[in-house]
Length: 284
Image (cartoon, rainbow, N blue to C red; front, side, top):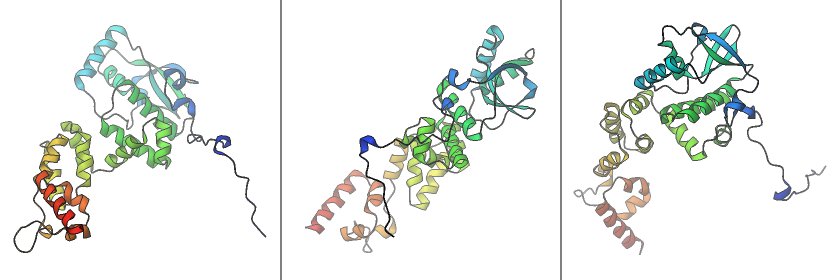
């Protein structure tokens, strides 16, 4: 029996597919009004609030103390956001405020918006959006949170982009950074290393060079992208790239057999020009 197919539909008449249809759209593109829709405002004792792993992991102690002074003087203007889980209240948004209030001895409770019956996926989206909107996240925290979101939801990069409002290229970079060794990410936060240092270090194929760069990253001796490029440009050609007769530039055909692009990235400008001339001569 012959198969039957649906009639062809023009692009203009095709129905668009909502990539976030499995999520609660009222919380994805965050504004306070949407976030707090359906939440109840209650006073909750600070000792009853449970703090789990948050999106933001880097805090400035000085800014926390300044915030505490402000709260002591003016009270808490923006309530915390909690999620009720049984008889517990889990902190979702406002860890900086919570930390600041915890330093104030006379402050025992705080006004909080209580959310209920939210999925882990929805809560992660709220945390990410709230932290991104209020204060710039460190790129390591952003990367870790997006990677955690992907692991929890199994979402593709396109779906993450739609759900969290982050560009696809940034999602891709975050997933790469999120998978880096923990020691490297901790060093990046400690020494404020530029994120492109980590991304370009990840691409290095020479094991010895990669290990040497990692050592500099962990010690805080390599912070800027320009410093990494300078280090790579000074790296001599590997033994396999040299001529057997004493260090001359390799023949063009030898480069064509391998990954020429990767080989040339680590060479200085003059060497690249000489290689280009060799290539042109060999191909003519």
